[in-house]
Amino acid sequence: MMFKIGIVGAGAIGKEIARAIDDGTVPARLVALWDRKVDEAEEFAASLAQKPKVLPLEDLVKECNIVVEAASQAAVREVAITALSNSKSVMIMSVGALSDKELLEQIKALAREHHCSIYVPSGAIGGLDAVKSASIKHVECVTITTRKPARGLKGAPFVVRNNIDLDKFTVPTEIFSGPAAIAIKEFPANVNVAASLSLVGIGFEKTVVKVVVDPTITRNVHEIHVKGDFGDFHAKIENVPSATNPRTSYLAALSAIATLKQVCEPLKIGT
Ligand SMILES: NC(=O)C1=CN([C@@H]2O[C@H](COP(=O)(O)OP(=O)(O)OC[C@H]3O[C@@H](n4cnc5c(N)ncnc54)[C@H](OP(=O)(O)O)[C@@H]3O)[C@@H](O)[C@H]2O)C=CC1
Ligand SMILES: O=C([O-])CC(=O)C(=O)O
Image (cartoon, rainbow, N blue to C red; front, side, top):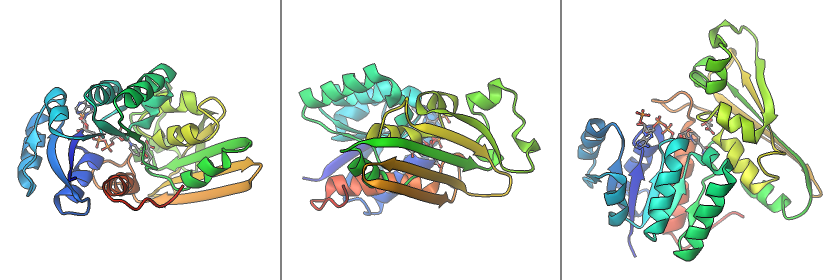
């Protein structure tokens, strides 16, 4: 069966995924895409060989069998519920939205009822396979420290509300430390990775997130530490920011592409 994919959100991640389907990296058809900037989406769609239609969510969902959300946390509810209610699987990039337990339970129930899947790519981090395995037994603590240059944190609600002038920092400075449940609301476009980590590990309340503004780096760095019955796990990734959105690491788009490839191919590797 040739998978038919629709993408909601044609920004840094959505466009990269679209190009990977268009050039055959993902063995599927890109049937439709949607973005609230409709004119830009039309122009982008026309630049692709597969000429996907630009359709609002309700229509897009009817055309495809996998719906990709690459828009925003606010879009997740509508995208996931519309897709799953129409018996279409969904891949979610704005994972922070799943800290809402009711929403998570609702979409899991819909997926079961309609025999569909909800895919959450590893995004901008590595090591979720190990954390998932470790979590079969007792895990004591999970911490993720996210370091970004000032431009990678601009506009975050925590930064805006506290009037933090990110450009004034001359040395790496921790501006936030707290549970993932709060971090993903305060930094919705910066720490979706902490949501994925919470979902596979010890949950949104116990996972600790630290956010550091670092004027000495140009990359988005995530460091993970996990301790449990299995031993200790340390991982550090230094991500190149995407060309069009400095908050988003390039690896997040590559991870989405790799996940779609895995969905479309028979061989599944990794925990
Ligand atoms: N899981 C992970 O590891 C990672 C997840 N992310 C998350 O993935 C998502 C996509 O990231 P990215 O591509 O960099 O973001 P961009 O801002 O580059 O692109 C998102 C696009 O979707 C549009 N959009 C937002 N809401 C809607 C909506 N309700 N309906 C239609 N279009 C909408 C935006 O329009 P407008 O510009 O008008 O808002 C924008 O064009 C973000 O939520 C981001 O935080 C990012 C990095 C890593
Ligand atoms: O891309 C990154 O480095 C991480 C990110 O923005 C997120 O998880 O929301």
